[in-house]
Image (cartoon, rainbow, N blue to C red; front, side, top):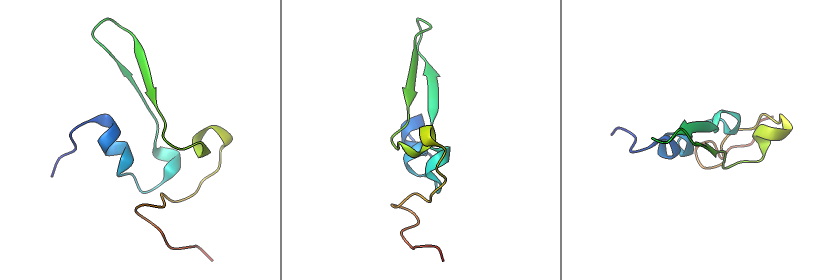
Length: 56
């Protein structure tokens, strides 16, 4: 099934650090979507929804 939006695709990403997007609207305004804080602190961790196992 294809994703219905950029945020839908990001919400299904396996790594939280890949969960970031900037989109432009028709007027040239920019919108960011980053549902996890890990992107901004450079912390690489799996998406807990898709990869709930702990790494050892």
